[in-house]
Length: 424
Ligand code: GLY
Image 1 (tube, rainbow, N blue to C red):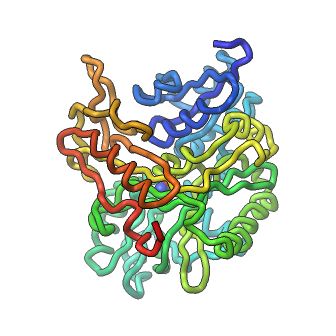
Image 2: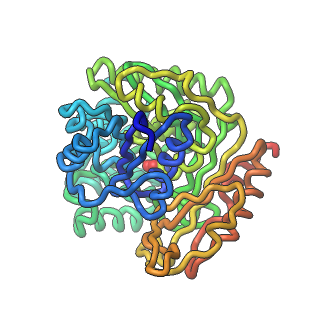
């Protein structure tokens, strides 16, 4: 390892963190990468750091190791105060302080922020018991959201009373996600798009827009998942629409962060719906999307490590990055039983036969024989890029199909459903 190598730790263990590790490793500068806790798959680029039970322990380790930059992948560590602990130790952290991380960890905080700063979003009512929730539902479809973190599973779009009762039972009777309140939200119809910005010092840079596919089955059927794939391209939004999103959503949000003196540094994810009344925010996340990262980051070029370091120190340097103008597709394979459960121990074959595609590990581990096997719900994602949507579909699905394991589940319509009008 070169003496002047920049030492970076990525916090997390999933496909998004594997994509972050790869994007960092591709930076044209000497680097020494770690991931906490990381995984056998991520260790291709970043050495695992295990046994860290909270931000204080991790920051102690960072100081001992003379880490130059901490990159937050998972939201849970930010909600626990990772960036605050880094700030106290003078370690640059790419990820917001605990207060601002409530934009993701508390939907009420996010809605109040949007109301305060005139960021367009759906109407809502907050309830803290089952009867109040029932009373707040006035029409169908209706959207119910658990207020706290729920690993992407705390949202239900209910088309009837049965769906409402099922979700309320999960939240208020079974306490599946914890003991927080529930939002009853106006249902908004339209195309969805994820826009992830890098934010620092009151400035922002938006990355290539993306769309994720949350349902398990083709045609957006079946239960919600953490995401079964994503498509990314600058061509997802025309210039006028992107300018409108920037003017009506991104700029008021970034200005709001400044007015509220939140000193935001990190990725800010805008989950946006394009309604007939204009674009509205469905949710904020205070980190990159998953699986959007596995689609967007492969088409980022330049000094990603330098960009995040400067951003974490308080200055955004957009010229350090370039974005490919083509298409990128990420396809997820999940294990048997997902999302209700997940089966471990199925050996994965074909990982070394994917050609130009990238494989990002999420729920895998190496067995004693040194082979990767399933170890979680969403097992891995395959990503590829191409100038056109039809080419990228062809390339990415060909790569996906050489990988196999017993009980695997995937969708066949990623990049075609919702993109029927795109000329290939
Ligand atoms: N893809 C949605 C999320 O990352 O929360």
